[in-house]
Length: 263
Image (cartoon, rainbow, N blue to C red; front, side):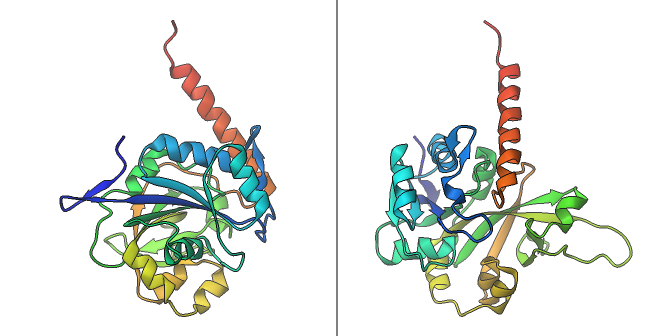
């Protein structure tokens, strides 16, 4: 099995952390949800193992109910404080307490069951840098509904794909004619230096305003590189998103059955 990545001839340990906060504000207890007869978190766990891209996969949970659920499908979990305000803060806690170690840290949120292997491979492409660096994903938006939806986070980048700003509002504003909008897909890869720098980041007014932790990174001088993908995902922000995700999974299953050769 190929897990570690090479970095100038050496091996780089890649750890995948799945933050699963129980008392989310928009959809409380969503991490306990059932998706097509299986726990939401189990979908992510099984995908993470099947991808065969990580040296270690672990949930970062903050409640015994979540821990018991993860235990029911033989997943691995580590407890983190309820006071952690974001998934990244949970990664930092695990690093600070030395419960987990690695050179590259993946933050795969517990409400993103539809991340595919192609997206993860794109995220992990060339993840080696001597400087504090963060990588994430973006996808071109074609739906007007998504462009104006505050639950769909938009991002603008420079010519090299480095993030300039993230917003729940449609950005940029096109004064005379329509242009391109990009959706931010909220999965991250950090090198250890970036996580250590985030640990000391100052309070961000932008983060508080938009409720987007990545704005704290930008405001404190960290660079976020966005890799473009064609695949889309469904972030579970509301109960109705479980229906959308279920529909996608059903279509994928039907597509697989059609493509399988008959015996």
